[in-house]
Amino acid sequence: MLWTVFIVLIVLWLIGIVSSTTLGGFIHIFLIIAIVVVLIKIISGKNPLG
Image 1: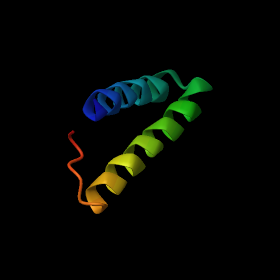
Image 2: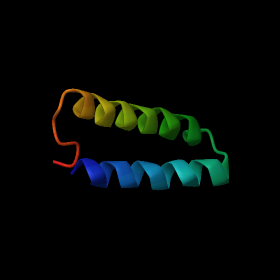
Image 3: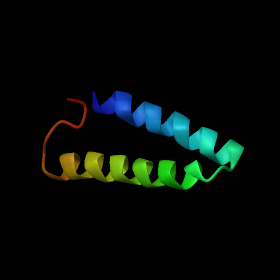
Protein backbone atom coordinates (compact mmCIF):
# COMPACT_ATOMS: atom_id res chain seq x y z
CA MET A 1 0.00 0.00 0.00
CA LEU A 2 2.77 2.42 0.93
CA TRP A 3 4.61 1.67 -2.30
CA THR A 4 1.46 2.43 -4.30
CA VAL A 5 1.11 5.83 -2.63
CA PHE A 6 4.82 6.47 -3.14
CA ILE A 7 4.67 5.64 -6.87
CA VAL A 8 1.57 7.79 -7.39
CA LEU A 9 3.21 10.74 -5.63
CA ILE A 10 6.38 10.36 -7.71
CA VAL A 11 4.34 10.40 -10.92
CA LEU A 12 2.32 13.42 -9.80
CA TRP A 13 5.52 15.17 -8.71
CA LEU A 14 7.07 14.64 -12.14
CA ILE A 15 3.90 15.94 -13.81
CA GLY A 16 4.08 19.00 -11.53
CA ILE A 17 7.67 19.67 -12.56
CA VAL A 18 6.85 19.34 -16.25
CA SER A 19 3.65 21.39 -16.18
CA SER A 20 4.85 23.99 -13.63
CA THR A 21 1.33 24.55 -12.34
CA THR A 22 0.41 25.81 -8.90
CA LEU A 23 -0.53 22.25 -7.91
CA GLY A 24 3.14 21.33 -8.22
CA GLY A 25 3.81 22.89 -4.82
CA PHE A 26 1.20 20.68 -3.15
CA ILE A 27 2.59 17.59 -4.85
CA HIS A 28 6.06 18.41 -3.54
CA ILE A 29 4.68 18.72 -0.01
CA PHE A 30 2.90 15.35 -0.29
CA LEU A 31 6.06 13.74 -1.65
CA ILE A 32 8.09 15.05 1.28
CA ILE A 33 5.46 13.75 3.71
CA ALA A 34 5.61 10.30 2.06
CA ILE A 35 9.40 10.22 2.32
CA VAL A 36 9.24 11.24 5.99
CA VAL A 37 6.73 8.45 6.71
CA VAL A 38 9.01 5.87 5.06
CA LEU A 39 12.01 7.15 7.02
CA ILE A 40 10.09 7.00 10.30
CA LYS A 41 9.10 3.39 9.58
CA ILE A 42 12.70 2.47 8.76
CA ILE A 43 14.06 4.20 11.88
CA SER A 44 11.46 2.57 14.13
CA GLY A 45 12.50 -0.84 12.81
CA LYS A 46 9.31 -1.68 10.96
CA ASN A 47 9.22 -3.01 7.41
CA PRO A 48 8.56 0.02 5.14
CA LEU A 49 7.14 -2.27 2.44
CA GLY A 50 4.27 -3.58 4.48
